[in-house]
Image 1 (tube, rainbow, N blue to C red):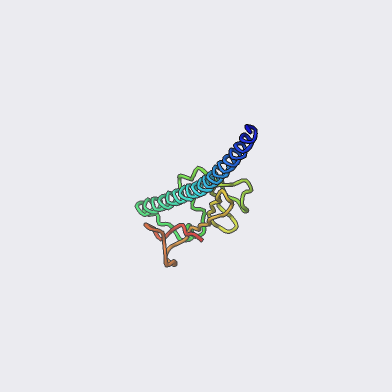
Image 2: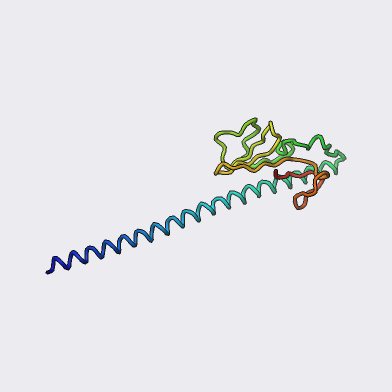
Length: 153
């Protein structure tokens, strides 16, 4: 009779083990999903911080030019590469390209064909911005100054 009892206990422990492994697998998948979502949010905040710093740099440029009596002409800013006007560039700026760089992820580049500043996210989707005068727009970013802004398209 003792071998019969061992067999039933062995089946129960296998069932408990299967339940435990299933619970751990479910919790691990939830954790991985949450980490992926958190990573995407961190990347979005980093991109927005870079964008805000570029906008502040443009405001500083406008202020400096006006203080020295050198106004910015609309031809200078319309569809220009804003990073050529700024002294500080984001660390992840890869340069000017006619096509999307194949190896770029979580990086900025300037599209010379479309005349847009582009951010490529890690998952491959892009955000495109153009430098333009705000006089003809019905909106601008908070604190836009000097009649120019980086506008999301």
